[in-house]
Length: 137
Image (cartoon, rainbow, N blue to C red):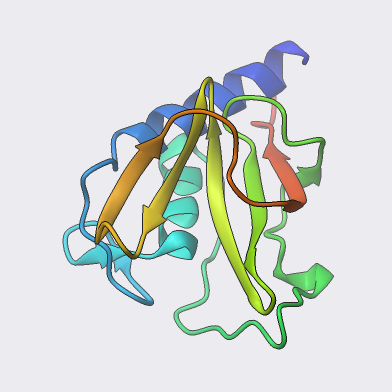
């Protein structure tokens, strides 16, 4: 990974780590009120410096995501680096976003009712991955 990509990934990961413990809330976009997986990724990207807009309401139709759902400024990647945004398939028709950590992922866990750091291998198939690189490094 190049310098700007590494810096961007470190910023996204640090922002996601700072959200660990925030309560889970479906469609949540404000850490003070709660976050879901989309809210977690959107807040982490914005706090890292990315200019992204996260939808207030969304629905994943039959477990598919349209290419337009990837925020501008992110690039497709292999998902192996810290700070990468991962799109995981947690069920036949359910997708979930997470942020890659050095050992595991940061994600909004509906069962735990909060944002958590989950160590180890990603427990679901990865359907897509994106990376944010700050402009100018």
